[in-house]
Figure 1: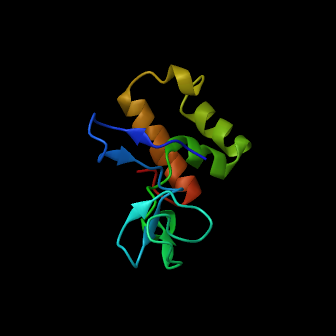
Figure 2 (figure 1 turned 135 degrees about the vertical axis):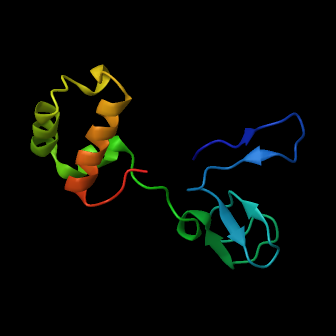
Length: 109
């Protein structure tokens, strides 16, 4: 289980990882309660926030994983990129992401 992070010295400001956060329909609270019930009021009408909140689009790394190693290496070769850590400039990165998006059929951002 992830940890709750206190963002400010005040106790009322906390961070709960989305995958652990649940919303209670009864008491309108968000918590990291587990076990299918609200840790605040005990009601069972809780919803996983991960299922309610739209997830961000895939990043370039996830796109690379989705198209497979062979196609990914082919794109790097075609764009003359030696490795992901040695991309020369922003234009080269944009071009790489564009190529990966085209192959994966989905946007990176």
